[in-house]
Image (cartoon, rainbow, N blue to C red; front, side, top):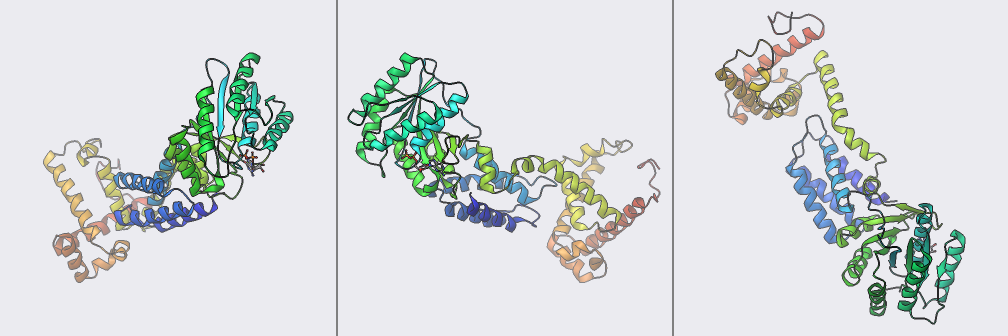
Length: 443
Ligand code: GDP
């Protein structure tokens, strides 16, 4: 399920991969892709707009965590937002203090309302909550038979008064019966129509006013896509819902409904139907659903582990680079930024034994020096960053970098030669030959 959405998001992320920071423009590209993905998945347009603008705000506000690839960070932002839209955690079915708990099932015909009624009863029975199901759909005699048959199958009693009685009266008496028999939960199956109509709504409202349910659950067919949004809005505005059951998630549904329902009603999706059998009901978990929508089996773990794992991998890679002389200006810049992220240079240097005698003036100079380095490296081409020798051998390249960064050619020249010296020193250290650095490395 959700294949199409997963594919689209996957291609959105591919676009982001390989870029070294989340910038406003590459977020715009990715956001456009995400927007298209969600729309193609039949998420309601308004929901998509709000979702996108929230992701945008979060992505732009977020600093790129050192060592985390921008696409991974973006995955986390999209994932977090998806989870939030769908409601953070699973919200269990209400349980009334005064028994019985009354659950009213609402929804269009064919969405799986009657099946969901039986599924819910079976689910509760397994939790040792006794149930009574009430059949109020008098317009389709087959509907009453269907519930009675399901009741036999799962060994849950069904209250019915045939097809000549008033649905409101059936509901009222059904709850009375449940009370008299001391059952834990009464689940009322109601009539659906193929489309929303005024009579159906009026009857539902009367039943609701009469039995005052603890839960009014809207049953939504996940296959209906965009329509799920309109349906949710209408039922919520006219009847008021406390939750939803999303059915037919075992089919090749587009997933958009999951996002829309919660967002539009504010009511949580409590269960999902994943098959025709009465056992095929599962609690709804927003985080799992988000993972499925994103098409990544274990995105949760991935996202949570991302930072430490990538930090580790990055540190190892950096060490490898240093030892194999592949350490270049890009790596150097990364290290500079790490230093900057860790707070002021002064604070760090003062923690190093033997370095705490530096004056504030000297430290200030160090910080300024860092900024200069960064500005100059930023003006280099990717090739120059990779291969500092290009700069060492070309005065015109150095002049261009100087002009771009606002410094002079000798400054660039000094940066390049210092960098080369540092790099060869690091290599020697990597090979076990420690050049004379009194006091600093204990050798
Ligand atoms: P109602 O008219 O809303 O009461 O819908 P029903 O409960 O009669 O279900 C309509 C059809 O959808 C039936 O064929 C059910 O077997 C089927 N159905 C219900 N829930 C699911 C589900 O979660 N998955 C699948 N694949 N089919 C379902």
